Length: 436
Image 1 (cartoon, one colour):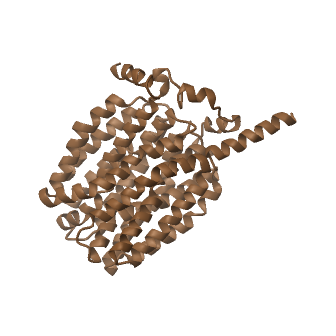
Image 2 (cartoon, rainbow, N blue to C red):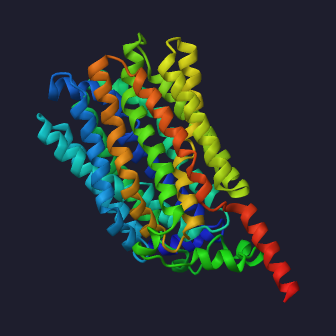
Image 3 (tube, rainbow, N blue to C red):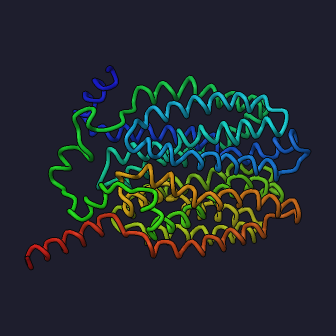
C-alpha cells in the first residue's frame, strides 16, 4: 500500500514508468554484472581449484545455467503475460543470493554444477532481462526501444566498474569471499529496493502506457495496435518466420557474448597482458555509450538496420581479437565489440515486441529461448575445447565471427518496427480511408 501511494505521488512529478526503468537498471547492474562480467576472472581460479586447471567443464557449467533458464522460460513467460513480474524478480534475487553463498563453499565440480547450472540458472532467468523487460513493455509503447536501452545500460556500467573491483577482491580476499560479497549485496541491498520501487502495471496507479499526456496526443495505427495485442499460442508462434529468425539472430549474439565474456580475459593473459581489467572495462564503456544510440535508432529506423549494424561491428571485433597481439589494437577491438553488443538485449526485446506484439511478449520470449539454446550451449564450451587442444583461442574467434555473418540473414524475416513502420502504416490507413 505504501508503494502504491509513493508511486502515485512520484507519477505526478514524472511518468512513473521511468522508475521501473531505474529499478531494471539496478537489476542489470548487479545481475548481469555479477554473473556475466566477472566470470572470466573466476574461470582460472575455479578451474585450478575444482578441475586441475582444465577450463572445459567450468565453461560447460555456465552454459548449463543457460539451459536451465531456457527450460523454465516458457512457463515463466506465460505467467508474466498475466501475472506479477515483481514477484518473479524478487524470487530471482533471493535464489541468486542463496546460491552465491553455496558457490562460495563449492569444493567439487558437482557442487559447482549444483550452484551455477541449477541455482544461478534459475535465479538469473527470474531476475534477468526476460522478466523486467516484460514489466517495461507494460509501461511503454511508442518508446519501448529507448526505455529498454536505458534499463540495460546498468549492465554496461557494471562492465565498466566490475572488472577492476572483482579482480581486486579476488586478489586480496579470494574467489570464495568475493562470491559471499555478491550474495550479501543482493539479499541486503537489492531486494528491498525492488520490493519498494517496482509496480507491475500502470493500471495499478490509474495510469496508462507512456503516460496519459503522451498517449492522448500520439495514437497507435490500428493495424499495429491489433498486432501488438495479439495473443499467440505456441503452435502459432512456431509457424512464423519471425520466431525462428529472432532465435537465430539473438541465439548467435548471446552465444558469442557468453564465449567472449568467459574467455577473453584468459585470451588476453595468454598473449602476454598481465593486467586486463581495463580492456574489459573499455568494452563495457562503449557498450554503455552505444545503448542509448541503439534505443533511439531502433525507435526511429526500426529493427533491421540496427541489427545489421550491430552484427557487422561484432564480426570486425572478433576478427581483431583473434588476429591481434598489440595492446592498442586489442583495446580498439574491445571498443568495437562493446558497440556491437550494446544493442543485444534491447534489440531482442524490441524485435519480439514489434514482430509478435507486446501482449504475448513473455510467452514468445520464453519459447524463443529454445531456439537460442543450442547456440548458447555450444559456443563457450567449444571455445574452451579449442583452447584445451590448441593452446589458443584464435580459431574460436574466427568461428564466432562466421556465426555472426550467418545471423545477418535473420533481419530479412522480422518486422521493421519503430516510428518508421508507424508512419508507413498511418499513411496506408489514411490512403485506405480516402479510397473507401
